[in-house]
Image 1 (cartoon, helix red, strand yellow):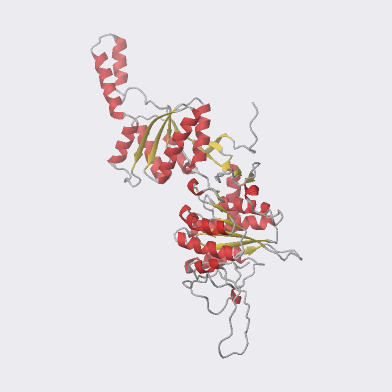
Image 2 (image 1 turned 30 degrees about the vertical axis):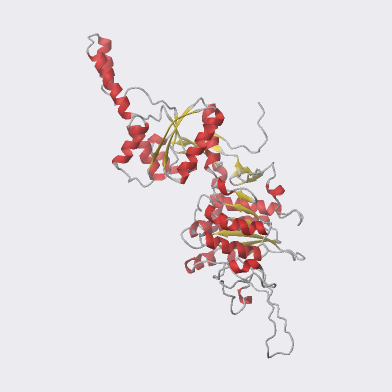
Amino acid sequence: MALLYQFNWRSVGSLCLAGILLLLISACQPAKVSESEQKDIKEDTTNAKGAQDLKDLLPPKRTPSYEDLANTPTVDPLARLIEPGPAVTGLRAPAPAGLTEPIKIAILLPLSGPAAAVGNDLLKAANIALFDLANGQVQLLPFDTQGTPRGAESAAAEALVSGAELILGPLFSSSVATVRPLAQSRGVNVITFSTDTTVAGDGVYVMGLTVGQQIRRVMEFAYRQGLFNFAVLAPNTPYGDAVVRNVTETTGTLGLFLDRTVRYPANVAPGSQELHEIAKTLGDYDLRHRQLLKEIQLYKSKEDDQSKDYVKRLEKLDTFGEVTFDALVIPEGGARLKELASLLSYYDVDPEIVQFIGTGLWEDPSLSAEPALVGGWFSAPAPAKAAEFRKRFESLYGYQPSRIASLAYDAMALAGIMALDPVDARFKREDIENPSGFTGYDGIFRFPENGVAERGLAVLEVGPKGQLVLEPAPDSFAPALN
């Protein structure tokens, strides 16, 4: 279904006319997408057979975006926020005969700009869910945010003028700030794909896989394994800030001890001496090296064979004694994570003694190639379901999607469930905040009153040949029975 919003235009007769001519035009006003994305849009299932394209119904000349139409009684006040842009085609499942009232669900994504690849993956995933629903009344209306707050504002305005009853997206928290007031003004709830928990509440629900729930899950597991003293090695980034904050909160909640927190610049060069110093600082390398020299000096003057053997063993070491923490949280991924793990091991933060713990950034099969990371723990959605989604997506579109694409499938599936409710109860907060929760490709989830999704995550281990499940994800939110 083409993305549409309804305009009623009335043109009062000019001076040369004796009467009043009333002209009512309903027009489609499409959302924005860059020329570079036109090819992707054409290849997407959004142009599948059965999609209705209403571009030909557009008026020959659009009202300039800078004209204030707020006081024009025949035009929706939000129309003044809509920027002109090229068409984005939406979807609607084949409609059974007799169904005339569409249920419109908007999805706000960066379909152009730097994040266009992720945005289009999310849209395609939502399309899969739409056709799985097989509800011809449900329309999915995509709008391009261009990855900017202003673009999101325009997209939200267009979605609301179109009659959207629920908004999925946007992707970025900065865009939520411009979408929220418009949605609230129409009583429309928003389910964003952002991971920023600060934007949640008052009708905005955070669907993203937040670092807080990942940290709490794996630290609670570590606590049950007898680990009590934690350290954090985190970059000076907002993500690093979130990890430090959540580790601090979780240690307090569980009665654990946060031994130390070491931060480092996010832009430190690979292979630099600064990285070496960071690793040495975390593990008290210089202090422990001095302790080694003292221990060697203490026993070197002794003549008994036992002391001589002990000194020989000491002389093969770099440090004496162990670090004062038994678990280390490293919120990094990719090449930087591998480099840090290798350096930590080199400077005697032994992964055989200290449990390395990560975040969702560790959901990377290539980490098995770094010996220091093998045995590390992290939490994530159940890998079997995640793999099932990726396989299905690839079979339809010919490539592996971005990791977060499954969020859009689950959000659209949730919207489809709520679309079955009576019109006066549809997409209400009571529905979204169902305490029993929902199940999707990313496992079980539910939205409490604070708007941040609670999830059932698995605890995984980096194995020598791939990821291993240490503790499976729960299949319900029912409390466990002892």
